[in-house]
Length: 298
Image (cartoon, rainbow, N blue to C red):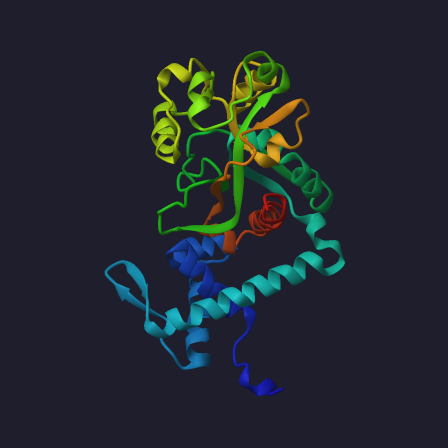
């Protein structure tokens, strides 16, 4: 190895990365617990050591140069490697503390997430995990949550999104309901049954009817904004519901309706603010969720 080729230290690279992620020298200094002059000197030392210019000042803003853009992915990779090392060495994850707020649908919060939360408690017992079970999209930019699990990719440029899996769903009903009202044998026969909706029923009709259904609002006389409540209705024999296979397979006395029907496939996106790159606690939770959901939802 050519040890002489490494002409800067990690603190300099970290100062550069924090400036990019936080958007300014002052914000980066606050995030790292440094004074702004100290952080500025570290960035300048990195530029001098590499003999490149990383930022240009445009008005009051700092803009990455082409050299800075080319360097950024390498520094992020360094951060990720350093973070993994610190988490695995001598059980250092045990010292990670503070609150991390996760937002997910109420169905995922109630039926999918508990096992990974148990793992988090073992890995980082000092963490405070707040699960916001909400079917609306909470604003990560306003810090209503640190990490979001959603089925739509966010469009905001300062959010990080990772597609962790593609889950499947089918129609389900209780055995008692199907014994009472019959088991539909085709998509068309579904229009003779009560369906339980959660969320926007009109949107669900718009999505399903092009697939061969003939549903109308009269099929959705029961429902709830809460997926958990709607699922309990189905368990109690009140109608047919579309549900994640992962949730349904763990529920006794529920049958898959139209078992030969192709599954409805929906993406699972894991989203976080760009502070993910500078917060050890958020990164730990993000990575564990990504690994868990990637395996769980397959």
